[in-house]
Amino acid sequence: MANSELSKLKILFMYDYFMKHLNAFDENSFVTVNDIISYLEDKTGTTFERKSIYADISRINEFVNKIGKVKHGDAWISTEGKKYRRNELEEEITVDEVRLIVDAISTTAFVDTAVCDKVIDLFPTCFGNGYQTTLYPHDEKIKSKMISYLNQMREGIERKEAKKITYGYRLGNSLTETSEKIISPIELDWENNCYYVIAIDNAAAKNVERDHELTVNALRRYRLDRIGSVNFSNEPYITYKSEKIKKQELSEYFSNSVSAFASEKHVPVELTIKGKTRKDALIAYSAFASKINRDIMIKNDTKLEKGILEIYVVTGLAPTLYTAIFELTTIKDVEIEITNEQVRTEYAGYIKKAAKAAKLDRL
Image 1: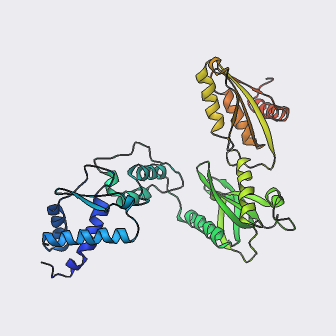
Image 2 (image 1 turned 120 degrees about the vertical axis):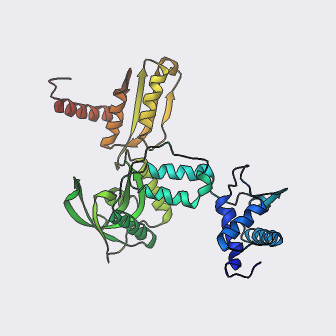
């Protein structure tokens, strides 16, 4: 019986059924022809013959094969006796990956957690069997204009268009000390639970060569939640001479950044971490390494069993570098030694400021 108008959509209903209701990564996920017939009857009000189901499964397999989505040359829908399963498609997102996406969204302050429900609706088989996330949701509501600013920056990067922005400082819910800037957005970055726009400051870039000098004099990092407005600008888009140079300069720029604070200068930092135990040294090392974008070299781990670890890294001379170093001293039973005299001197200056803030007569 295939006379109704809805019956013409049968093959599409079947494709959607196998796509959304069967899990390619679960060996216990399967259907029978009777299940398919019941599903189609519920959707169309029509009872279909078994042979038409077999024919449509063949057509669906042929279609998926033609568009190059079949993994390892297998049929997408396979049969084991009376059981029908669907196999994995090329580049298909796995159950683990989908759940990781939902976890990332639920713990990212910039994204409305309602997006999680949309992802779950797209991949229902990945969240069956009573699945519940064990991560605590932030439930922060992001203003739609902030998402609009983000997309306008994406547009500027893609189209190579300059943007006119209002930029200032957050004071409660308002923006103060604002100024207008013309920027050429280059890339987006994510640090400190917020988006940053890496861009060329057009005013600072005037009469500057488009190579390393452009990075030193005009490359800036703008925090998205400190932007009050974004508009199109007729000023020319400024960027590097080539994509190769841009990639090299951005790589160096990010490497010299510590917790989103960039520095045009980079210095060698040599530290000796001394803990009472091996575990103390490893805890301190992990805390420091999480703040530094560059790879850290282990100079000497032969004393690690005694709680001593010597490390070396060349990184940006940013104020947050000293925050990361100070964090080491807050870890119980850990002491540090700084070899680099410049780093040691500047660190001492910050410690004196901290002592003054704490109203200490002396250290």
